[in-house]
Image 1 (spheres, rainbow, N blue to C red):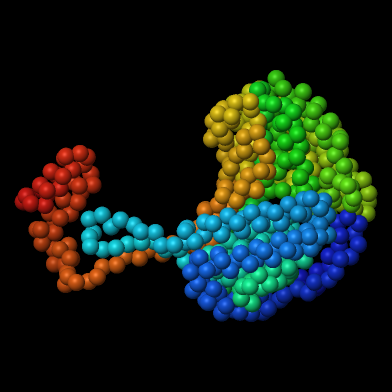
Image 2 (tube, one colour):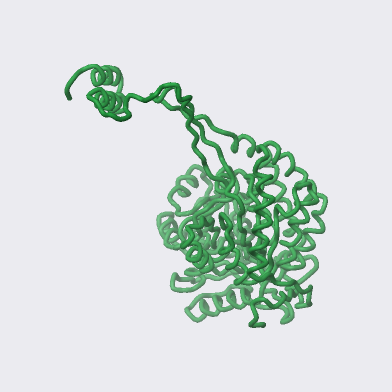
Length: 510
């Protein structure tokens, strides 16, 4: 591995280690120039009404659909994931396009606000773009987790400078082409390639906001670097998402759903199920079925597979270290957890029992095809142990009583919860995505996501026909009566509200 942070990126296929190509790395001066150029173009883009921006972005949506197979090939080549999972990234992006085209014009239009007693003034709130947003995206979903913040920023009137992961640069490099081919201005979106120093330069480049998706450790570094400038930062960080299987659950659905939710994309998903708490009454039956289903999965580098290779070697090594730690501390690996080919990054999916909170499989994010199952007494213990983690991204509850599931969901420390389902919330563009604690504090998707990529500006208009207002200088006894009347009007209820306000206004004394 090179020690030169600005040496070209050498990309290899995780399926077999074969070279895919070399990518030049941008130095800080190149990053600064990209930001400057995007800022010039963004001014004109921001001046368009939200309806016009939405209409023009529909051209980008059509371009993504037209080139969907090409995009999926890029994704699969860089990540090793099965074709169906690569196509899923494109499908989710198109769903978000449709959603934002529907809501952005209304959400970004000025919103009238009552001025109450301050007549005859008018007031409203309008949404304005931040300006130029720097986006640093991850390798596990190199298209969807890159394109989603990019298009949300564009709907909001911003320009974008994007730094894709150094492990998946080709999936990010296609985005400016899609934007320009879809009819948007040239250089409204620019890509800079590189490792950590390139990302650090983006934080220091004068952008107006940073959106980062990745690990909590890197998120802390970005926050520290942004603090001197008071640069706003959005953080979408990791997860250690729990599933709670209650005694009344449909075990067949729970087993199938949790196997899918844990092993999709070889477990390299921030909202993957990384720990399962199963009530004692159904624990053994659940584990048996999960092991049966896991053994049926086809893991391999290419071909008709369910689980492909892990994308980067260091993540595979971390997963193996977590499994070794669990084994040493008494866990039982019921199936999987083995490499099938030294030339590829494929790890067979593992189911692990007898897991304790001291093991890294529970205390740290694993981010791989490993499913730890923990026996608990009842619902109460399941909730308690689910909430014991510092992560708080997503969770799922499996029960035959949907209302009970909702009650349990509201007790969980998580940004979102599914009842008898898994990963599907990712495809619902109107549901915000984000977490608490170690999982970050911002939101993407939904109205909340679009608001995060814009900021509120308050406008109040007075036609200015009077020379002064009665509460301006100089203060008089009447000034005090006005304030007393307002206190009684807002502080009392019913008829006492009116009588108190009139009394404060027209009577002398306290």
